[in-house]
Image 1: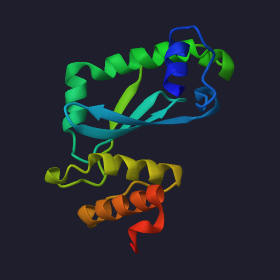
Image 2 (image 1 turned 90 degrees about the vertical axis):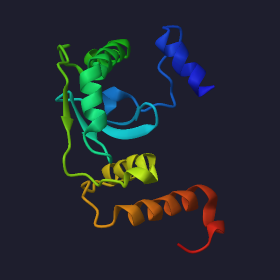
Image 3 (image 1 turned 180 degrees about the vertical axis):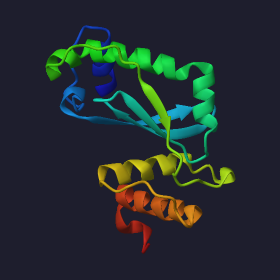
Image 4 (image 1 turned 90 degrees about the horizontal axis):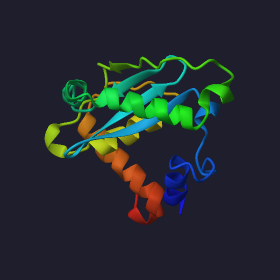
Length: 165
């Protein structure tokens, strides 16, 4: 149902979905980003400056790929369309400006071991740190940090039946 509301809104036949936090009420939008074929990275869109900070647990590879393939330009066009669609500028009471988004690769983020395929876990870790107002920091032992975070997520979703952590 929620997905249908969203599609209807984007098609112009429904109002803004009430299950979503309105972008005109926030300063930052957190974005899990999929990079095909099977990698996830994290983006932080700062609406005031139109900067997108990219956090990638596998290094610069996806960032460079996105830049080379024009994915950032496509993303910028989609964000511009979305901001116009939700009447962002009017609701914030600011003049509409060309976006001219800046995509910034963040250097000092935890790096996973490439063979573990923990990128989704790292995206969740990055998001948790952001919503908790903690800086994203390089981990001494990223492998164990990812395993511990997986356990915490599982315990959160499935309760204490998993035993002690």
